[in-house]
Length: 350
Image (cartoon, rainbow, N blue to C red; front, side):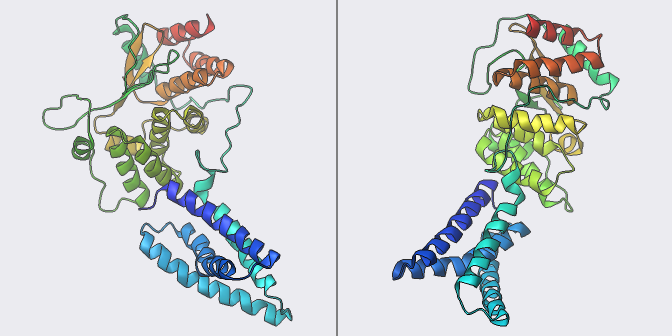
């Protein structure tokens, strides 16, 4: 399995190798430096740039294919100038350098949140969220959770949660689905492996990566979870479970801008949460703890509404209050009778 961080490293290595090869030839550098630089580039880089797009999961196989492809592409590039009547070796080398850089930048992983070419420019106004798919039962569950909540002192900061503005103290609880049917907070990688169901025999590579990412997330290995979930999201854009869990992993690592960008994209697309993968691999379902005010925290099901409230809290954390208020206002307009949303909006406005 090759994580997104490794793929990004390869992209940088390929681009730098191509530029160094061009620099060595352009400056007329001789000796071992020229031999090593051009040998590495011609033997590995063009083929690796192409093979990486195939998303092979075995580094050994990927490197072997890269060597074979590089030699074949180099031979082809060397033969083209002959038919064109050009004798300079600079022409085929320039072709290979351009091809390598273009293919390295074409890898979709570079354009995901966290990739080098991803850009999350803050908007000046809140984007319109697609809330038409929210069921009436989800709105009722939000107010039911609020009415069942007792007012308490603000929670103290701990290693397992992040405390910030109201709506930002987010924690995910995964519930077990064994014979006891008892709800329990999962702790540790071994327990997560037992509780989260295994993928089916015909499950896609993206689904398997999502399951591995969920295990890593629940086991609080957030760095590993990010790599797995980014790879799953790059392979399959139809499902939203991996992107939402990726946003939660970003949040745990303090990457608030990345988390906000991912959740915003999910909500603007009109995604329905929880989706099929969430329902399957998070067993009885995931719940999130949302702080409505400094003294009131509610425990609700993970769905489109709670995702939007998490987004509002992230906007507050990023000092984007207009967008945070805009998200809650859109929720309030969709269901003006909600007591919880009224309280949340009042807290933000005052």
